[in-house]
Image (cartoon, rainbow, N blue to C red; front, side, top):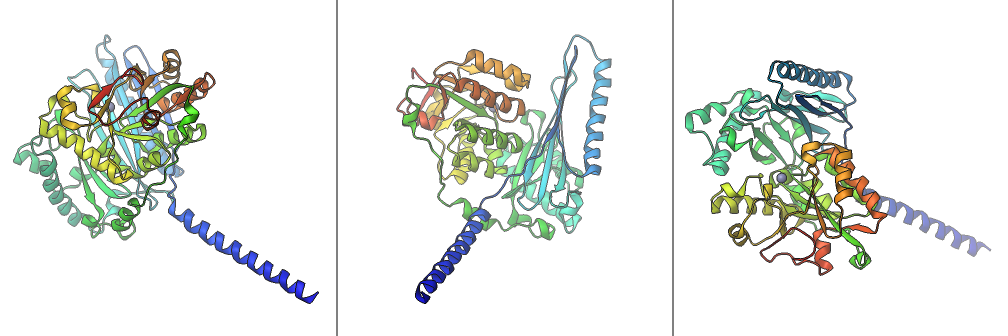
Length: 462
Ligand code: ZN
């Protein structure tokens, strides 16, 4: 009797031991996974005869900060309406305010707002502004609070910017005097700082360091270049992060044999990633077991590597949309290669492999560009015009009406309306024997071949 009881006790102790060990293991595993916080957004849509307003801004817990954002947006809308009222009635004026979020994975969030306003001039006006937010304490962080010593910070930012801008954008920048004004060590010149997980980006809006035609330029600083200036709590040891990224990537891929006999559609998402909307899309695709292709911009991958890593791990194909969305027709060979290679390097640093597929900005490419760059150019046969309408129902109906076996559908994951429409369309079309596939899956199915200086508009007939 005694012996049996003893055995029982040993069993019990062993069991407890195993439970403790496995919970420690689970805890360690969990710590590895970075969670992505999302914010709800407030959306304002107003379409009148001579103007369109599309505004989106985040909802945060802190009332004071929430009111501040609200007032700012209300004020912008009011001013825009007053201007539009005074202008000719026969044109459509536009106000478009959108935001992006950057997470430094240390409770610090950067909200980056972009305002595009069209009031009948030669082109849009663009304005950027940025707010910082402490997610844990639920309070706004002021720009000044990022640094230990503001003056010293400005001096270094000015020097680093001169050096880096000249390195990347030499032919586009203003000549010296105007450039120096735009990079003078004053706060006005360096207010647009995105604090990312792996590095820090400074944005220079049109006209600050280069003409309008060059668009907004940006440079990327490593944490080790500015850690000394940053307040303690915002500093990061980048080495550790970089090493984590080199870990072999585990991907959740499907058995493509199960796709045989289905009608195939390739959903493609350009211009991303974007913090909130791409995360929402990935959640939706995961629960529907659908795979898609993302044609990402290199400069955005650099700012949001974790989102791209997640998309890759969840089995989606990551293709290139070049580094900064320039029209390749306007570039010299050397510049084309720079746009392509920078983006490929950036994607490789996140996924571990160079992308095989590319979607050229505006769909602009030719034989010469293909031969120069040695990638597969993927165009589309269904254009949802989602960027123009930003309307969930319109995009949803467009997908349903045009859906066909072999369809390559062009969408943009920057817009919540596109994400919602795509997910709804997946639900509907899945009932009609459609499957949603990535380009890697199409290659595994032997339907297409990638990496052979080739281009196509449809899944079949290539
Ligand atoms: Zn694009």
